[in-house]
Amino acid sequence: MPRQNRVTPTGELIADPARGLVYGNRGCLHDAAGRIRRRYAVKRWISCRLEFKGWHRHPLMQPGRFTELFFLDEATAFAAGHRPCALCRREDYDRFGAIWRELHPTQRGADAMDAQLHEERLGAGAQRRHTARFAELPDGAFVLHAGEPHLVLGDDLLCWTARGYIARTPRPRGKAVLLTPPSLVHVLRTGWDGAVPLVHPLAPG
Image: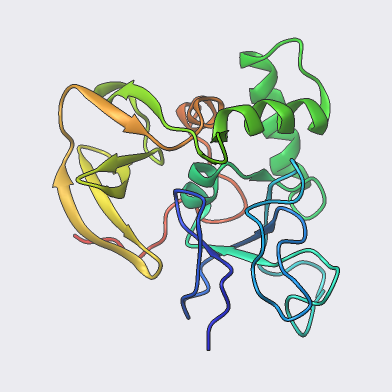
């Protein structure tokens, strides 16, 4: 039976056998039996490489250790409010920090970034939604469309599933319900291309 450690663009944790292309964590979310008990444990929500220096943890969800999370791609991790890890993605983290300071000149270091992201991604215990114009959104941003998370890609929206993208819809006009935190939308606008895949290759033609 799959574990409840696959992350959706709305930040929810679901059980699905598809692992995805990006790994991460937000602290220990599970109990001794491996059941998810909380949405997050720390403000440091990170996204990581699936493989790094041959490190391997088995079994997953060990008692008292951080909960291993999996994302379809980095666009999904961004939408959920995760940023690049400073350990396994050091070059990405340094570049991310430089871009971040363009938007938030007074903020320095991981703690400041994480505090800002925490404010942008959560409100009253649930994902905070934002408003933006469809025409201004960069590739890789996520919106809520027809009640489902969709990826912005070119002139289209792609419907998200845990195993890939399943439908292509023309990008609407007007205002969008934005899932990706605004600071991470700014990062995407720079043409972000990190060490992990931004968009899963299984996208409809």
